Length: 312
Image 1 (cartoon, rainbow, N blue to C red):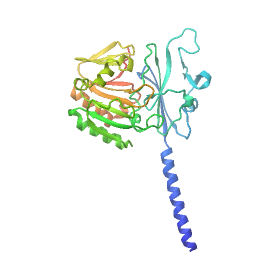
Image 2: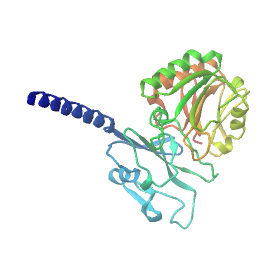
Image 3: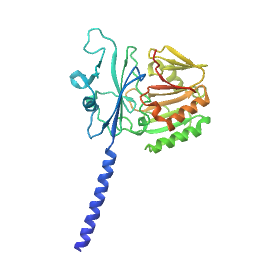
């Protein structure tokens, strides 16, 4: 009897240790921090920081960078000598640091955002004089989908027009392999795109998807939602003021916006005026996601990948 009890105790201890190891594996990981300037057009620094429980963005920044705080210490006013042009200065310019966790613009001070393992934090110093706040960027992909914002991982749907079923399925497989459990691939329809409880990726030529009222409305209000491109015969790359800087005969767009400001659900557009360019852009997402790290949005052509809003 004694031997039997000892045997079961040993088994219980073994399973407890296994569970502890599994939990440690889940909790272990790094937080990646990127510093950039001008809407992702100039990289400044990148660091991988060891994750620990109850780790705030402020703690990460204070321990790894030279930061200056404001508003009682909860907000970051300057990083490595690059300071706000608006807070605490006489001749004010609307230049400040903004931070994104897994691609979503944070709505709280750095002292109040607590991170999860493997999160991506992107700090960008940019102009906000047009009062447009870019609420979602692609540069943390695929964490936008797999880690979510504040740990809130949403269901995802990939909606495609008829020519992009294969690419959509490849993209779905990639995201599943990265740990995203709830993802569906469907034909593009006119309903449910504004559902703020799920992320949506739309893939198709602009001539096809702009027939959807919801997408057409997003595009026509791009100066408010933070879209920095125009498509007619060609694709036009805009700067942060909404002015055209460059133009491309053929290409595609990878961009994202939040479905509703302040909420984490996003809609991603992979679109353009050329079928092969669109397929090339989707392929980047499932074969070479590192190429979009730190970017805000992209124009993809046969020869290059251009961050938008484009630098003057």
